[in-house]
Length: 377
Image: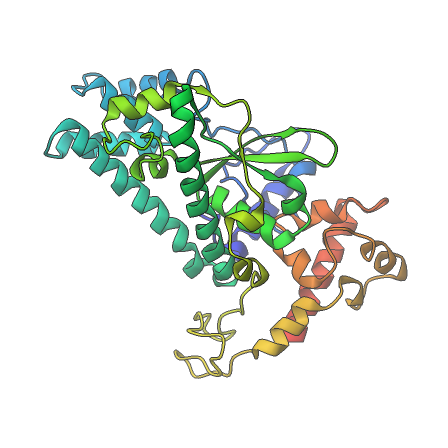
């Protein structure tokens, strides 16, 4: 519940950090791509255990079935429909149980009712992702661009599977060059937001040689099923046909696409951190050109001022020592203040500098945040 309220999440993980001792090991359940704040460095202070089950796991169907038997000991449902709902849940048991309830109380032919339930579930996930722009206004542009990326993935996998099914193969994963994502903090954050909302599942990366590491993603299966990306070009959307496709062996290599192929050039060039809401009442602005808050009437931050602040070199932040300024200027991924703020875990990035540890990285981040607050006030 706290994952999309950064100010509360920062305080929460600060408490987790303080509680951790030699005798106490606190455990926190978080969403993928959670923003831990400046003081808590997950890669350094915690051990990450992934509990999001991949649909590609050989035991996926059995595990989801075992969960449903605990909640519904007696379940009268067509097996093909049941298995399809398990895949559509995309590794989230709660989603599977919810769809089972909707199916049991629904009316209609089994396959048609199943498709209706899955489509409704996908629309809910899509709405939840798009509503993040209301909860986190500064990422509105990234969220809109991410939706285009996601739609392109579904479309490309649909075309790919239409041909692969004829060869008794299927593909649920799409590979994106890792260097394209890592080199651009805003692009990286855009993909992380899709993962955080459960729209994408990130599989282990694969290497095809030097500088050819691909980050592999599986789009939400409810979307692939609803948009008939697993029907092989057939008009039929029966559960048995979709399950047959999912059961085919995977193509040797994932479908590969560059970021520039997945999104329009104008979209990628326009990626940015959006203007903040009203500093008095925290009401999101309606347009970038808005001069005054429509709720309280306070004057809003000018677009040019905010853009100038985000584009300032990181080594121009007052308070950094001469040594720190020299070192941050040599970071590959982070050159500006905006680059640092776009990264989910800026502390880890700063700790790549030799002799910069947890304490020093936290102090450097606090200096940057303090400078931004003063600049925009």
